[in-house]
Image (cartoon, rainbow, N blue to C red):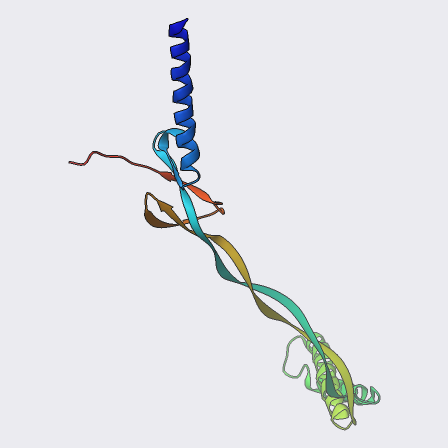
Length: 187
């Protein structure tokens, strides 16, 4: 029974000493490696600064405006009609002289003469026509550029064993950051 009481008292004292050491340490920013696994520990984060990258974004958009346009339009198709008749007559007379296939070349010359005559007659008629004005809508595609800020990470300052370090992380680490601890013998 005496041995049992001594063993119980010894366990109680050991438990109180362990609890006292743990309670007095508090959150000092140093976390022993045996709590987190071999080779890793936690360090206290002292500051976190977000890092941004400015990205230009191109957005095409259609820009339209009203523009006044001048044009001349013949009052009647008479100029083209008269020019076509004159051109056909000239083509008919000129076509076929000195050619072996007289019937085919005369028809082609007549058609070509009529077409050229109609174009010339239309242009003469248009040149003599009064100038008229109309409003037409014109459009073009233009590029608009905007700048967008993109979060690329966080610059994290942390303290471990009395020394300060800096690293960049993708995620916000919170109040502590996991660090790799490497121990080697001092020779």
